[in-house]
Amino acid sequence: MEEKRHTSAEYERELQEIKDRLLYMGALTEKALENGSVALLERNAELAEMIVREDDKLDQLDVALEEKCIRLLALRQPAARDLRFITTAIKITGHLERIGDMAANIAEKVLILNDFPQIKPYVDLPRMVGIVRGMIRKSLDALVREDIELSRQVREEDTVIDQINDQLFRELLTFMMEDPRKIQVCLYIMQISKSLERIADHAESIADMVVYMVTGKSVRHKSFS
Image (tube, rainbow, N blue to C red; front, side):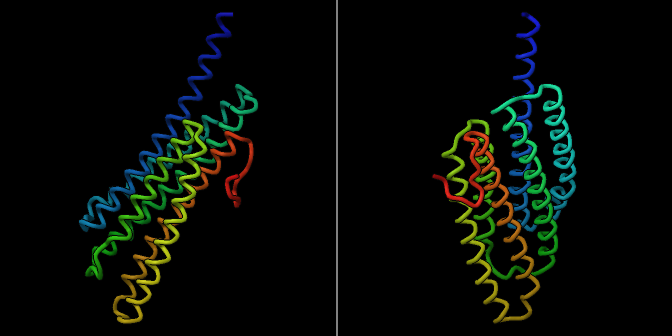
């Protein structure tokens, strides 16, 4: 009987460790995005280069966490809700790894932009960074708390990101039409904006997975009921 209680406690510890590692990965992606915004505003090449270098850390965490989840599935053979949580965690770590890749890609674009004169004050991009960082945090908080309302908020904020991205695209298109010399810089800014829009999509996907984990119902491509 004592052994059974120990096994159960160990199992719960392993589940909590998966949650903690997901939150840690989320915190790393948030920090990379924050540093990317600072590097852009301050034209800080050293900070941008650090983001690119540290992307390997997220890749390693992704592999390690996926292996831990697969091992837990094989050894513990969880059922029902725990099974949904572990399989969801495997998918979420992949999304976080891709967010890290995009943060590194943004940093690479920042390094290029530093070699060009700034064509306009950076307002929209830092705003987008702030929103997507919040989306990542909320989607993972929703996972830990099993909070569907937080997932709903992430979906709503994804719409805001889409609107800012579209607005910025139109503004930059006007710049390019008025002065062809600005085309190259505008294209790099567009690429950063598009990367942030894709990061928001990943955060929304995580939020949708939380709904599935909690309710067993898929809401991908659907509105919350």
